Image (cartoon, rainbow, N blue to C red):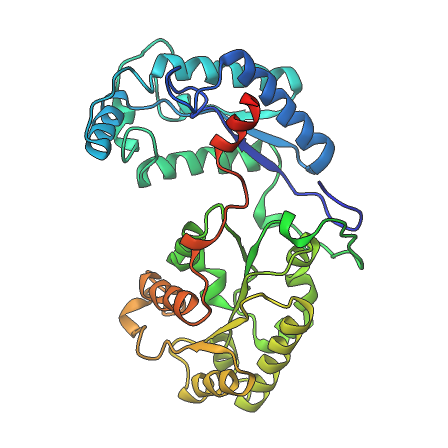
Length: 377
């Protein structure tokens, strides 16, 4: 829940129902009546405890591709499905229920059946089958369609346009009452263009994918931000993490490209970066420390400054000098075309140098079977 001193989220996106709509024989199945009750309870809890400023966006489960899911199951498990585990007809019942509840409680919705062009009365696999990698989970094409629909709903229905979202001023104090172990783990990214555009180039999204359900990746990168301007906004950049109350797993600092372009003296850059690192160590106290990353395509002196600071403060550093070449940049030469190389180098350091292996981290949320065990007892 939002505590005293914390800001409410702009909006909350809720998408549940795909697993609930599994066959009765599947342990993930939730009866339609129970799904309806729980969905109402979820929406009520979000409204009372999170108080999103622009409301909730309810997203329906998508229609499965039955044939492709059956084939994927047989390939993975070595045995064919004994019954129709995921069907368009059954999933439509849960979709209809979510749309009805959205209207009744007054929240906005996105209908993924309509987004994928599924006929209202058709239960057969149609043109939407090419939107899944296995008949149930979206591939790139499905992701793009879902994103476009959800993003347009955020802007048009909820009235939240990221282009016009002003900066918020963090509260001076945060009241924390629960022990660290009950709160969400975070990974904090701070830097300039490479970090700001990290979802576009892919290295940030790849990192977030590795830590799904074990830690939240908070991207605080700002395009064209120098180390000098970063010093002025440190508390604001880290306000969300500080508001969560728990210490982050680790923090990645990737500065230098903007300093090089702005011709910030190397000595000043090194001094600023040192002050940033010391501030992060003191006020955020990341469990596994700080990972420094050298700037891309900058003067060697800036890269050397980062490596030198890493040795001085005993922080691990990733040297991108031999990892990224000019061929890895977009035509304008400012941002990475693809972040695969950057992600690989950074992730290897996270595992080998910081000692953080996402496969060995416990989940922030219990496995669904644990909830079923509670219900049975």
